Length: 306
Image 1 (cartoon, rainbow, N blue to C red):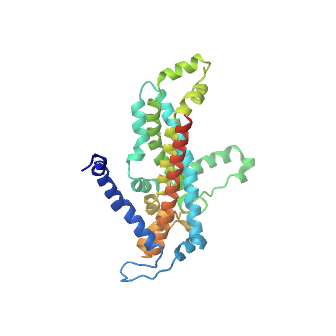
Image 2: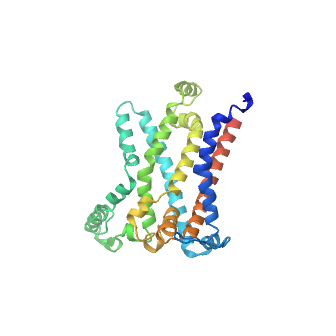
Image 3: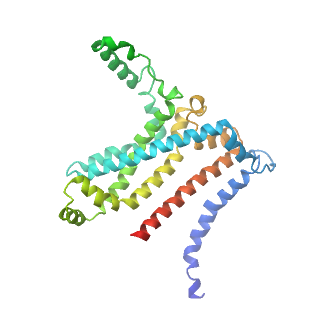
C-alpha cells in the first residue's frame, strides 16, 4: 500500500464508528420526522414538514420552548458564575481546599433523579422546611411590626406545584447540581496559569486582587470559559431526569416545566408519536449543533488574535 494511504488504517475505524453511532441515527431521526410513523405500524405516511409546523405553531410547543429557554438562560449564567467564584475561592485557600472541592462536587456525582426526590421534602407546601422557615420568619415580623401586619401574608407558594414558581424551583435545583462541575473545569484552568504572570502584573502596578483577576486571570481563562459555557448550555438543554422525577404525568402545572427532552420522551415513548418525537429531536440537535459551531468560532477567533 502506498505510504500516502497509510493514514486510512488509522482514521478508518474512527470514521466507521462516527458514521454508525452518530450519522446513521441522525439520518434516521430526520427521516422519521417527515412521517407519521408509530411503533408497531408496518408503514408510515409521508407528511413533509407538517410535524415541524406543529412544533412552531401549537401552543403546547410554545410552552415547551418557553420552559426550555427559561431554564437554560437561568441555569447557565448562574452555574458559570458560581463555578468561577467557587474555583477562585478554593484556588486561593492554603488549607482544606480538597475538602471544599469534594463538598461542592458531591451534587455532580449524585444521581439527579435521587436528589430530585430528596428536594421534594424541603419544597413540600405543608411539611417542607422552606415554607416552615418563611412562616416562622413572618410570625416574628408580625410580632415586631404590628403596624405593618397586612404586608406579611401567611400564604406561601406551592413551589413545585405552582405554575408561577415551578420552573424557577427546578432551575434552582439545576444550579445546585451543576455549578460544581464548572468549578472543577475552572480549577483546571486556574492551575495552568503560571504564577510568574501575577508577579509581572504586580510589578506593572496591578496591586489589588481585582486588577490581577482583570488583567491576568480572566483573559487566560477565556478558552476555559468558552468550553464551560458551551458544556453548560448542552447540559441544560438535556435536563430530563429531574423533570421526570417531579412530574411523571406531564410537564408540571400548566406545562410550565415542559422542557424539550421531556417532550421527546412524552411524544416518542409515552404517546408513541415517533414522527413528532423525531422532529423535536432534530430541532434539539440543531440547537446543540449551533452551540458547538459558536464555540468553535469563538475558540478559533481567539486563537487567531492571540
